[in-house]
Length: 68
Image (cartoon, rainbow, N blue to C red; front, side, top):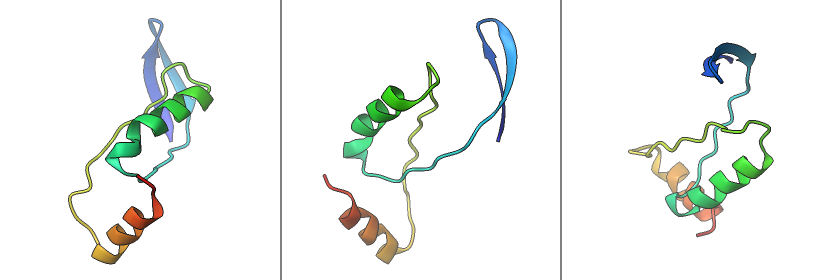
């Protein structure tokens, strides 16, 4: 992904990788802190999107594969 953004008053362009992690809402804060502690950026992008539907067997697998 090519990222274009303003940083410290200047327009920057960088190549980035997109990582998608699916987890429970209850684990989001811990996951966010882990990303911030291990990412090279001062402000890594971490966003949360709600799961509003999907394959029920997959959603059940996701729930059983993450600890609360």
